Image 1 (cartoon, rainbow, N blue to C red):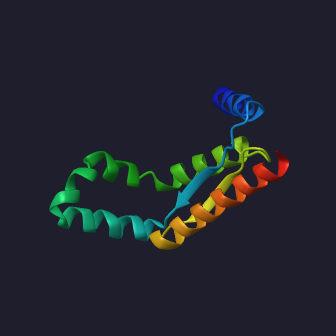
Image 2 (cartoon, rainbow, N blue to C red):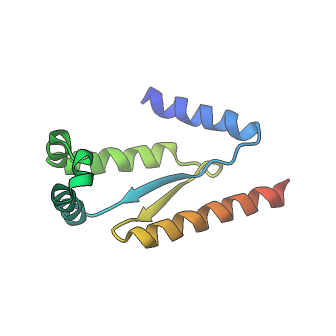
Length: 112
């Protein structure tokens, strides 16, 4: 709980000093994660990206979803918002992220 307030306080300091903060949460489905894990297993130059720890953590999917929702709720502010990105489709995710960054920078320029 302490970390959440420390994160928000730190972000406020950055913003007061001119930083633009946009935080992204890229969400994929459990099915998409499994598909990507299987693809990494089959691709020799991507196998290093997948470890036994990834498989163990996958078993904790529900707990991670709860923790992520808590983090987003407690650290998202008007000045430093979270952008929730539907990331099953990598290209859609990239376009949404780039669009969000452009929007945040344009808003900052308008206020300058």
